Image (cartoon, rainbow, N blue to C red; front, side, top):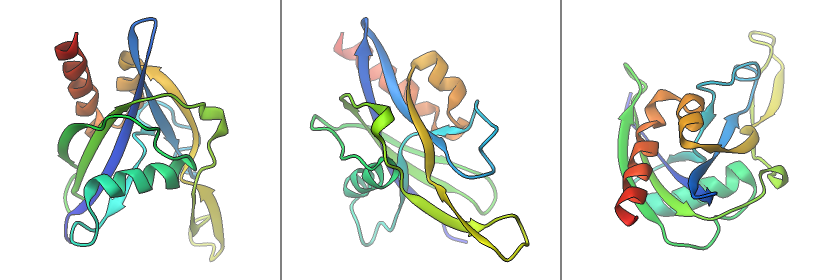
Length: 161
């Protein structure tokens, strides 16, 4: 199996001088009753031979949240490779300072067989909600493979100060 490539946007804002990031809670029945480790940076897969990573990040932000990426400067946070065995993922993320109301998201959907082995297909939201989190809380909420981006954002903001 070949590696998969994903790109995303880590939207952040400053509240009382402290950074907060916008994360999406993964949709579908596997994540419904989970919280810590069940949130994600808005991101999605792309084919590097067919699409630029930054364009894919903007497209996936829109597909997952139903909202366009706010205007602003894209701050490259680099690549992270995570996963195990044959499920390796290469994720490229940009941070962007901006604000949006997470209550107005209109998430994209996906179809899957549910319940398992039932032969029935059900539609689920890609993310079932979005919320702003301070960086320590976001660290607990994110899956481990995406956590390095919080450190990179912190480093970037510290260099700006």
